[in-house]
Length: 96
Picture 1 (cartoon, rainbow, N blue to C red):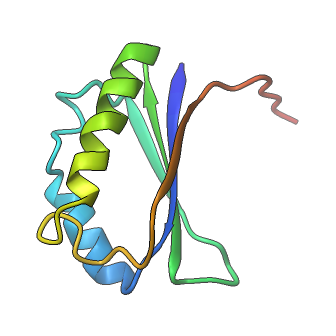
Picture 2: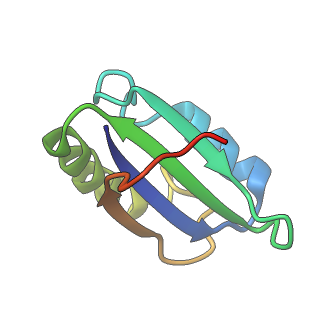
């Protein structure tokens, strides 16, 4: 499993979530198998999103497309700053 990890500030979580739910890139059709939205307890104006893919190629293509979306104020109206994103792979997973 390969993950696209995205982190960025938001102007309004509600507005950001509405844009996220609009799904401009068709997550399922782009190969996303699962996603998770995280918010720091001490910073409600920040989000982290993990999107899991079967392949590095799918993840890289999605990230390239996502960068185009971020340039569009209509598609990304609630961004509060420049997103930081990278393709990662788990080095270790342990359940205790």
